Amino acid sequence: MKRSILGAAAVLLRGALAANVTCSGTFSPISAASFIAKLNPGWNLGNTLDATETEGSWNNPPVVGSTFDDIKAAGYKSVRLPVTYAYHFTSSSPDWTVNATWLQRVSDVVDMITARGFYTVVNVHHDSWVWADITAAGANITQIEERFYKLWYQIGTKLACKGSMVAFEPINEPPGTTAAHGEEQNKLNNIFLQAINDAGGFNSERVVTLVGLGEDGAKTNLYFKKPDTKFKNPWAIQYHYYSPYDFIFGAWGKTTWGSDADKASLEADLAAVRGNFTDIPLVIGEWAASPVATETSARWRYFDFFLRTAAKYNTSTILWDNGADFLNRATHTWRDTVALSILKHAAKGTVNSLPDSTTDGSATSQFSSAYIYHQLNSTVSDASLPFLFNGNTLRSAKLAGKTLKSGTDYKVSGSNITFTSAFLTPILGTVTKPGSIANVTLSFSAGADLLVNVLAYQLPTSSTLGATSSKLPATSADLAIPVTWPSQNRPAAIKATESNGAYLEDDWTQYLGPLQQGRLTYNNHWDWDADHVILKSAVLDAVRSAGRSTTFGIEFYPRSLGNVVNYTVTV
Ligand SMILES: *[C@@H]1O[C@H](CO)[C@@H](O)[C@H](O)[C@H]1NC(C)=O
Ligand SMILES: *[C@@H]1O[C@H](CO)[C@@H](O)[C@H](O)[C@H]1NC(C)=O
Ligand SMILES: *[C@@H]1O[C@H](CO)[C@@H](O)[C@H](O)[C@H]1NC(C)=O
Ligand SMILES: *[C@@H]1O[C@H](CO)[C@@H](O)[C@H](O)[C@H]1NC(C)=O
Ligand SMILES: *[C@@H]1O[C@H](CO)[C@@H](O)[C@H](O)[C@H]1NC(C)=O
Ligand SMILES: *[C@@H]1O[C@H](CO)[C@@H](O)[C@H](O)[C@H]1NC(C)=O
Ligand SMILES: *[C@@H]1O[C@H](CO)[C@@H](O)[C@H](O)[C@H]1NC(C)=O
Ligand SMILES: *[C@@H]1O[C@H](CO)[C@@H](O)[C@H](O)[C@H]1NC(C)=O
Ligand SMILES: *[C@@H]1O[C@H](CO)[C@@H](O)[C@H](O)[C@H]1NC(C)=O
Image (cartoon, rainbow, N blue to C red; front, top):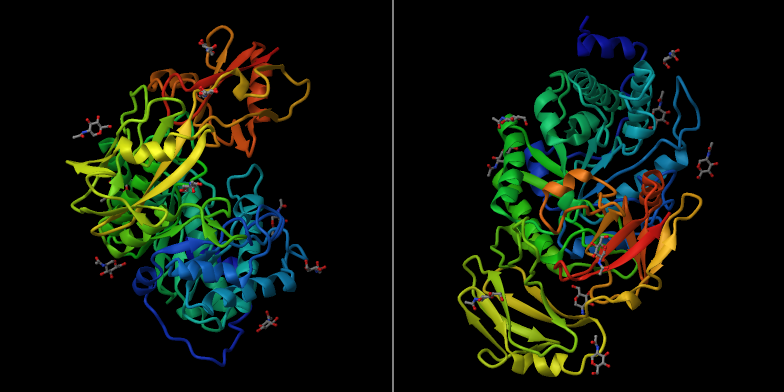
C-alpha cells in the first residue's frame, strides 16, 4: 500500500519539537530564482568538511579564510559547503545528538563564507553512503528518516539565524535507482523541510535546493516530486553533471572531447532537465573537467561549451574542486588559469576563442593547439595551429611579457596561427631535455587569453622507465614504476594486453578507436606522482586472476600510436 508522504511524515514527527529558535537580527527574503541566478558561478569547498572522518582527514588541511579570499578574487559568487556529519554523532537513536564542537565549526565556516559576500549552499554530504543509504541491504528506513530529521533539526537550529544568502541542500547524491527509491527521496526532502521549519528562526523563508536520486539529472526528471505546499520555503532543484564519464574521469583512453555528437549529448542532458522543470530554478551544484584527468584543449573546449549550454538552459553552475584540481590552496594559485578565465567569460556571456583539437574517436593520433610539441633533435620548422576564433580576432601574442611581431614571429592565416621557425629556433634550438619550455599568451578581441605551451618531448625508450618488467607481487599492492618523463610529466593513457593478446580489462573497448582499445582507467587502474607511473593494486589483482603475464603500454603526449613504452608484469 502506498503511504502518503504527508501521513508518513506526520507519524514520524509526532512529538516533534515546536519551532524553537527566535532570531534577533533581520532576514531579507530572496526568491529561489534570484538566489540561483546570483550564485553563478560558484565553487565547491571539496574534500574538506565533507572528508571522512573529519575535516583534515583527506588531502586538504582545515579551511582558512584566505582560501575564500582567493575564491572571491577569482570572481566566484558562491561557495557550496559540503559537510559530513556521520562521524560526529555523540548519541544514537532516538536523539542522534551531533557534537556541538562540529556544529560550531560548520557555523563558523558558514560565517567565513558569508562575511565575504558569497551566497552559500550548505549540505549533508557523505552521510548519503555512510548511514543514509536507503538502498543498502537491510536498511532501516524508519531509522534513516528519524536520524535525518534529528540531524537537520540540529543543523537548522544551529544555522537558524543565518541570513538569506545561506541556503540548505538536504543530502548529497542519495543512492537509488527505482521509483520506490525516488518516492523515498521525495519523502526525505519533505522531512528535511519539516525539520528546518521546526527548528525555527529564519528557516521557513530560507532558500533550499532539493534533490532527486543521485542528484542525477535523468533520475531527477523521472522521480522528483514537488515538496508539500505547506512549506513556504523558496526552492530550486540541484543536480550534478560529470558527463561523459570516460572523458571527465580519464577512462579508456578518452582524451578527446568536442565532436558534434559529444556536444549534442551534453546539450540533450541539460535540455531534458530544463524541459521537465520549466518553471523551477536549476543549479548544477557539482561539475568539473579536472586538469589531472583531461587533455588541455579538450578541457578548455568542454568548459566553454558546458558553461554556455548551462546558461542557455538558465541553469547556474558550481564547480567541484577537491583541492587537487583547480585552486592550489597552499600557494594561492590556480592550476589552470585559462580554464578559470574561460569560465569567467562564459559566465558573463563573452565569446571565447579556443584551441582546436582532435575530436574524432577513430583517429590514430591526437593534435591539440594548446601545445607546440617539438620532438627533441628534430629540425625546428613552422608550427601551424588551428584555432576556433568564434568571431574574435587575435590581438596579440606575448612571450614572457614581450609582444611577438606579427608577420615575422607568427602569422594568422584563415583559422590557423603559425609560429615561424625564426621565432621558435632560438627557443627550441638549444633545448636538450623534455618538458615545458615556454608559454605564449594569446589575447583576442574578446574572451579569455589562451596559452600555447611550447613543450619538448622525445619518444620513450627502455631507459624511460627504471625497469621494463617485474614479477607480479605476491600480495595485493600498488606498483610504482620509476620514470623519467619524456614529455608532459604524466601518462596520457595505459593499454594492458595479456600474453595471449586479450585485453586485461574492459574487453568491449575493442570496439572503440585505436587510441582507446584496451586502455585502462585513470585513478582506478593507474596514477602517477612526480617520478613514478603507478599501477594500482586493482589492476595487478586482475593480472593475478587472469594468470597471464601482461604488458602495459604506457603512452605519453602527444598521443600517437608510437609514443609508448612497454612494461611487463610477469606471472
Ligand atoms: C532550542 O534552540 C536552542 C538554540 O537556539 C538549543 O540550545 C536548544 O537545545 C533547542 N531546544 C530544543 C528542545 O531542541
Ligand atoms: C566533540 O568533538 C571535539 C573535537 O573533535 C572532541 O574533542 C570532543 O571529544 C567531542 N565530544 C564528544 C562528546 O564526542
Ligand atoms: C528501526 O529503527 C527504529 C527507529 O530507530 C527502531 O525503533 C527499530 O527498532 C529499528 N528496527 C530494527 C529492525 O532494527
Ligand atoms: C524529461 O526527462 C526525460 C528523462 O530524462 C526525457 O527523456 C524527456 O525528454 C524530458 N522531457 C522534456 C520535455 O525535456
Ligand atoms: C531563469 O529561470 C528563472 C526561474 O528559475 C526565471 O525566473 C527567469 O526569468 C529565467 N531567466 C531567463 C533569462 O529565462
Ligand atoms: C640529441 O642529440 C644529441 C647530440 O647529437 C644527443 O646527445 C642526444 O642523445 C640526442 N637526444 C635525443 C633525444 O635523441
Ligand atoms: C592549419 O594547420 C594544420 C595543422 O598544422 C595544417 O594541417 C593546415 O594545413 C593549416 N592550414 C592553413 C590554412 O595553414
Ligand atoms: C606553461 O604553463 C603550464 C600551465 O598551463 C605550466 O605547467 C608550465 O610549467 C608552463 N611552462 C613554463 C615554461 O613556465
Ligand atoms: C608492446 O606490447 C604490445 C602488446 O603486447 C606489442 O604488441 C608491441 O609490439 C610491444 N611494443 C614493443 C615496442 O615491444
